[in-house]
Length: 252
Ligand SMILES: [Zn+2]
Image 1 (cartoon, helix red, strand yellow):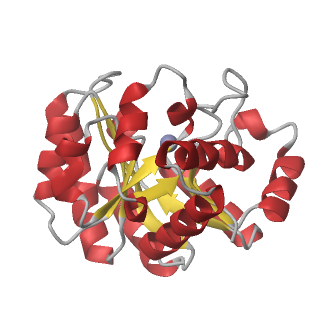
Image 2: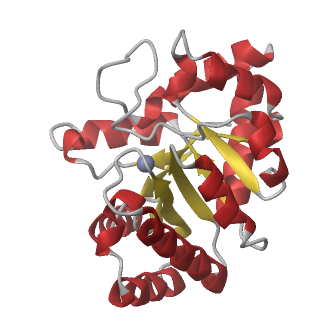
């Protein structure tokens, strides 16, 4: 079994120069990748790529940092896409970001809730972004008990997320390979492998040994290796289980 990268921004301009090589490497080495939008335009780009490449799937939605772009028309368009495009596998990335604080909390929560409702309506899972806003994020998730998905780049403790693990998977990315990141290593240790999916969030959050350079989907193998080290299990087992998890949540 090969790896699925559950969270990429593969349409990013940082891939412009060697896009074909990056895609060729994915095709040869991986099971597939998910291209995640942060606004309507990048969502459309993700769908285009999903049409062009059999191993690419799309997630559509508006990121909390861009939430001022979200209005009734955006919602209608996202709904139309979600109902007609077969390769859309989730609504995302959506959530709350109190680090950049581009818009007030209430506006962010409103856009987040509307997109949770949309996911419920079109019967798709969600991909959640949460930064310095964990409590409010989890409170909103509690309001939608029939929706599940992936908590991408989850920054909290195992205890805080435990009540959500029945419906949500945890996306583990390159930061788990950072030497001083005890928190994420402990989280991975506490989590059952049944609840973990692999993600790069490329071009960002590059794992060791390429930390500081541009990230790309094939680097997920370094994340799998670190999880195997932490859990003291073979890396093949990590790959097999996380790929099964990704297929299950995205219904691939
Ligand atoms: Zn992302």
